Structure formats: C-alpha cells, structure tokens
Amino acid sequence: MERLKIAIQKSGRLSDKSIELFEKAGISASNNSSRLLFASASDFPIDILYLRDDDIPQCVADGVADAGIVGENVIWETGQKVVTAEKLGFGKCRLSLAIPRDAQYSGLDWFNSKKIATTYPNILKKVLQDNNLTADIHVINGSVEICPVIGLADAIFDIVSTGSTLLSNGLVEKEKMVYSEAVLIKNDKLNEGKEQILEKLLFRIHAIKAAKSNKYILLNAPKDKLEDIIKLLPGMKSPSVLPLADSNWVSVHSVVEESKFWDIIDQLRAAGAQGILVVPIEKMIL
Ligand code: ATP
Ligand code: ZN
Image (tube, rainbow, N blue to C red; front, top):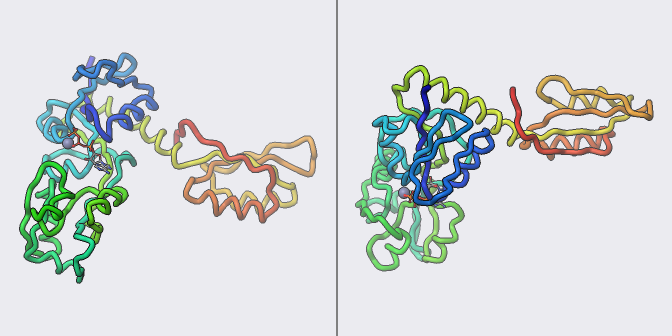
C-alpha cells in the first residue's frame, strides 16, 4: 500500500506546531527519540522525515519527500519548484528592512548604495529589484542584527516577529517587505495514490482550520425577539432553535466566525439575548 512521505522541521520554531497539526488530524507524528530522522504513523499511511527546514524545499522538489511543512520564506529563498497545497496559519513572520535608530531615514531611497546584511540574499535581491533600489547585499549566516553595530553593514534585512531583538541591537524596523507563514508543500508530480492520501490529509486540515476560526454559540432568546436574533447569526446553515421550560424563551445554537465574534455578541445582547455561551469547536466539517 502506498504511503506519503512528509518532511517537517526536526527542531525549531515549526516543529511543535507541525506535530500538533498531525495529532489534531489523528496522526501520531511525534519523534520520541531525538536522534530519529524517520517515523511511521501507525494510524495513517504517512511517514515523517525530520529535517533542517532549509533542506525541505529541495527534498520535496527532488521527490525525496512527497510533501513538507516549511516557511514560505525558505521556499522563496531556495527558489525550489514545489506546489503549495495549503497555508497553515502558523509560523507567521515578516521580512523587514531595519536601520540604526539614530539614522536619518528618508524613505525607501535611503537604502540606495547602502550595504545590507541578510541571510536571505535571494529574497532581498527581488525586493530591491521590485522597488528599483540598488544596494550592496552582504550575506551572513548568523546574527544579522549585530552587523550594523560592528560596522559590517548599514542596514539589515531579516525576519521580524516582535521587533524587540532589533531594539536591543539599536535598530528600528523601517519597512515591512514580505509576509510569510508555514505552508504544506508537495512535489509537482505525485502519483494518484499519493495524491489521494494528501487529499485525505487536507480534508482533515480544513476541518481543523475551520474549527479554529469558528466558535459554537448558545444563547437564550425571548420568543418575541427570536427573528431579530436569528438575523444576527449567520451560522453554517440556519441556527437550531430549541424549546425551554419557560415557554416565553427558546435556546438558540449556532456557529460564528471568531473574527466577527465581539461585534455579534454586542448586537445579540442589545437584541435581548441572555445566558450567552461561547465554546470552542474541536473539528468542523463543512
Ligand atoms: P533549522 O535548524 O531547521 O535550520 P532555523 O534556525 O533555520 O532551523 P527557525 O528559527 O526554527 O529556523 O525558524 C523556522 C521558521 O519559522 C522560519 O523559517 C520562519 O518561517 C518561521 N518564523 C516565525 N517566526 C519567526 C521568528 N521570529 N524568527 C525566525 N523565524 C520565524
Ligand atoms: Zn534553517
């Protein structure tokens, strides 16, 4: 029977989230021995390869692995030809241009003829081209953010998630250039059997993602306000309405998007809803 080989980061920022995603999908992927580079899920036709994130795009492009979980930034930097099957919503970060705090900043033109240190020379090259800038790219593998302090560069182009590392090195983020998150990638020539396994996995991932961005909501509504309250609840289809012991009241159940949640709650209260309960959803099949 066919099995799908998926590469994930061995140890790093994406490892736990990748394993957690598989676990939520009912696939045990945890690497019990830290020396192990390979594991077989017993409950799903998937084998997991644990690699350095930088090696994942090439492994998938070459077919050493059929699929992988990696940051978009790594795919863009390596320039490997892979297909993005799904954005995963974790490992979010941005690549920004940062300069010394005391520099007089005049806008993107400031970077013209400057020396910029980065571990992402290919992405930076593209960013400079797209903005008609000419700067000198200084490739460095380690702590990029110390380069300006020690005089190795005038500015840096690096991953930023909060900006505090920058600040402690006397730098300020000036331009947010590229946004990245973890994605599930696949080889562009998977056979039918492997595509089917991937489809099954994607079905489960969609259910997990939908559940995460939605909440189950239960509330009590006075019968005479029911129509107004139902209008406020978009739901998957139409909300469930259940009788209560007090015949003037009903219980209404529905699903709301997390992003619209506070807005809707305020409106529901204003419309007369009481005893509002909001509970997380484990899985959601649309
Ligand atoms: P490896 O040992 O596998 O090469 P690494 O040190 O290159 O690991 P990590 O620091 O673990 O990589 O980051 C993995 C990915 O997590 C990054 O490529 C990026 O997509 C994402 N990420 C999210 N937030 C951050 C952040 N604040 N700093 C660095 N990477 C981040
Ligand atoms: Zn890496």
